[in-house]
Length: 280
Figure 1 (cartoon, one colour):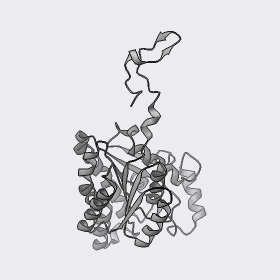
Figure 2 (cartoon, rainbow, N blue to C red):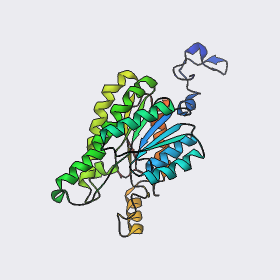
Figure 3 (cartoon, rainbow, N blue to C red):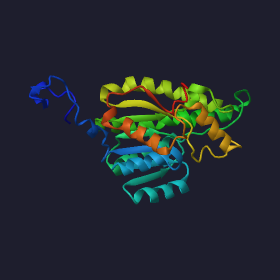
């Protein structure tokens, strides 16, 4: 691919002089993800589904894993109208069935280039009153589930030569907010540490690993969490630097960046897509 580090003798002449600088006229080509295979957990709804539509729209093939079989069926119908999409109904707490599903979709689609771990649960209640069985359940889905899919996908990601791992974090880890989501917030902190360690492990194989941490987005998951949605919207906008609610396109575009060659030198990082909430 041209443009990056182009030697001086190939550089464009400007005003009769040869520019002795590396140029990047073709950098936009690095954002192309067409033909790549993306596996997305938690893909039947919300941000997972939004990302799936973005990847299909960009010419990629997608495989969705989710516990909601009915939601997957509808998602597949929606996605198949525009491109290639396969689905598997699995519970990421079930290691054997989840890893079998990952291997099945890799065989069906011709490998895996991108793994996006988005599956998560978020029971509400004070940490001091959390039932330990429930806490283990949150850890199993939100942390162990990520490692489960990773273990199955990693051989394909290494073989790809351009493997990308995107683990979903959350703005909540940086804010310790909202109240009542302590177990969920703890798992999102674990994902940041896990991804940093992972980046060092897989980097020599040309695989990158990053965290994509969304702020507050008006998705189905947000519905029902707040009694007064209008008041919550106003609170979010007040705390952000960008004075609007985020859209699913904001997250989807960031995911495509991290999954593309444009981010081939970005690893071990946490990309906050939060409208400037965390520092405002």
